[in-house]
Amino acid sequence: MRKTGILLMVLAMASVLAVQTVSGQEQTPAGQAPASMQQAVQEPLPPPPSQVKVKETNLVEKIQGPTRSDVYCAGFISSVQIPETNFVRAGWETPHETRFDEPDYIYVQGGGFQEGASYLVIRKLRDPNRYEAFHGQHTAISEAGQMYADVGEAEVVQGGIRGNHAIMSVKHTCEPIVPGDFVVAYEERLQPPQRYTGTFDPFAQPDGKLTGRIIMAKDFDQVLGTGNTVYLSVGSDQGVKVGDYFRITRTYVADGKDPVDSLSFKASTTEDTQANTVVFPKNQLEQLPRRSLGELIILNVHPKSSTAMITLAINDVKVGDGVEMFEPPPPPPPPPPPMATTPTITCTATPDSVHKGESSTINCQAASPDNHPISISFATTAGNLTPRDNNAVLDTAQIAAPATVTVTGTVTDDRNQSASSAAGVTVQPPAAPPAPTSQSISFKRGSAYVDNKAKAILDGVALQLQQAADATAVVIGHSGKGEAKSLAMKRAANVKTYLTQSKGIDPKRIETRTSTAPSMEAEVWVVPAGATIPGDAAPPPTQ
Image (cartoon, rainbow, N blue to C red; front, side, top):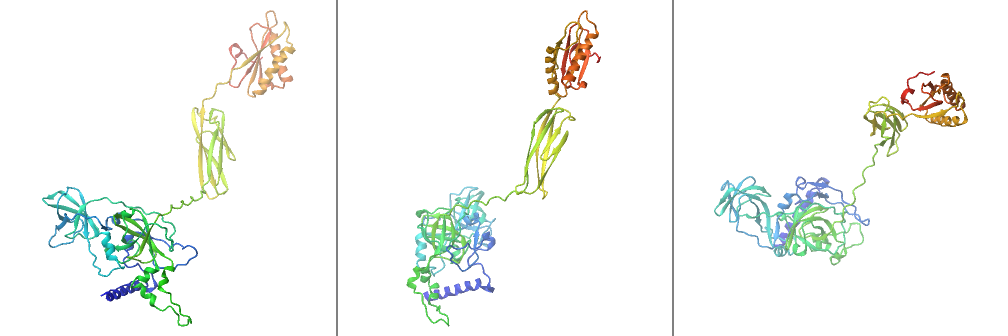
């Protein structure tokens, strides 16, 4: 009987190899889920370390991570007794139909049901394979517990509890539900995310962490690939948790013990022209390195077993292969963002608040990140601009105050990439002019002579006029009681003569007047632009 089993296994392996090498193209390994179900992303085989070259094998695919369907359809091996009191008796189309899918109605016998509650449908399994995938497989499965398949999920309909039966609506199925399947309370399962696992090393050294083996696969498959579900010989009793990672390993010693793989050791390796004959002794297989064939992630755990999904396979994975826990490294830092090429600009106004008629300077600092030629242009919402290089002067004389003016600077490079920056200028109504100031020049009775004391006072007046170029002067001459009235104008004229001839003040900036108020003085007013002198000094015309 055992010889027959070996022969069948050899034929099966030959069939798999034939499928994989048709027309020189690599094919999906036997037992591997279709790409549409895997939602896989193909990735190239990472370079092995230490300049070791590895022959290319099957397609390397790494899935994005287990889906909800993967988690709730994975099945499990449990050493804990599962309640068998509630089970599927029949369905809507009984007896014409015995396989039920969503949205069929099923009838469940048992008790403890609640309306609107969800329940999981599971199936107690037995291995139909009499042949062991590895020596001791049946014992290993028995030690791990009873095998169960996840079949689906159903919900008790409103008013659906009828004695010791419940009417349930099928919400989801992994495969059709059949009479005899057990119904258990719904239990939320974690959906572990895919993690970065680093560069795959096909010759990873043992790390001293927990080891075990694949004792069975979903649907009793024996040759596996990316996306397949497997069951391990280690569980929560050994500290295994949902989301843990294991690498899949195989030694040449294991190949030597395999009844099929070991046949190849008996084949000749000598070429027809080779003079020396070399036979590798099977008792030295432990000298060859251990191989890593892929990676898997834990979907759920039980005391003596765990359910896992293969996330990466570089070769066919077989039931009986070893597994070793490993801690994925932290992911590499994200790549730096691409260098910006758009030019930048920042504009400021100095001052940012002026009175009408005053000016503000807009300064813009602009640059190109990759040093391309740039130019700057300006625009304003009011007023007139005089640009010069990276500056522009805003003239506010024509702006109706109060107002807020926005001046925008735009930088453009030789690729027509541009950026803008705005600066605001607040324009207030014109400021009140400064008040005029006056000095008094004293004369002797009957005299219009400007003496040294008067000159000292006029020197200060001249300085004021020089410092305020838009100011003017008004000289008002007086005559005292008993003095000739013509003396008033002569005194004003002599003051103007001193300011123009001795101090260089423009005669057009000095106005002379006379006053009827009796005095032996001359008033000298310095009048800022826009201001007027007070009292009776304003109206009289120039004499």
